[in-house]
Length: 304
Image (cartoon, rainbow, N blue to C red; front, side, top):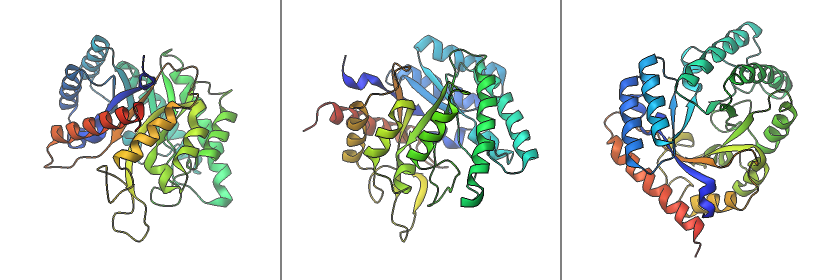
């Protein structure tokens, strides 16, 4: 078995097929075609609400042995909810909704329930917000524990550049999550190259810190010059003018493969995160991302 089997390719359907995300039947058709393609071992979507569609996706994933990741983010943002809000009433409403969404995710056979924090309130109230978010994660985790195959993963975002989220820098995040783990034991970190770079962190150093609790990797591109047009996290295509070239992607993967990844997980997912728009050739974009991921994995396995 090659080292790269410790990372399995995942299709980020929610981004690659973004114009279709409100059409759940179309999402299921994408899942079926992705599964039939035979390359990916997992896929990522938003929450599915229609029970027949959820059952279809679960059946396809089961038939093809695919890992299912679902994001609560789209659903919470749609309803202006915030799991780390300093407004206790809003936070309570957000927690209750997130717990309801856990059951919808389980209907799809989701193994990785994914979310992000809310906005960073600033230095003076950051610890207060983190305390509230910790409470939210414990309660969401208690609900997820009803489903033995489901873990909860948090994606740290950039704190200073664009998204300006509460949970951001890797070292701080890992330390905080490790303290929280006794109360939320299946809590993991979803690593995203764009947010790490926008936080002005070294990619390799961030991976080393995250490795013990990392459950997922996103190869995401961004423009890092604050003076340049497009600065921030816009889920842009790989390559220049962003920092995520093929060589950088290969180095990220090579670094991850050299680290002691979480001993509880047999393998973690890796996906290219690129958002499509109306009028794009969605399947051509998927093909380009798949080829980029394949090249990066091959280069990481055979450097030089």
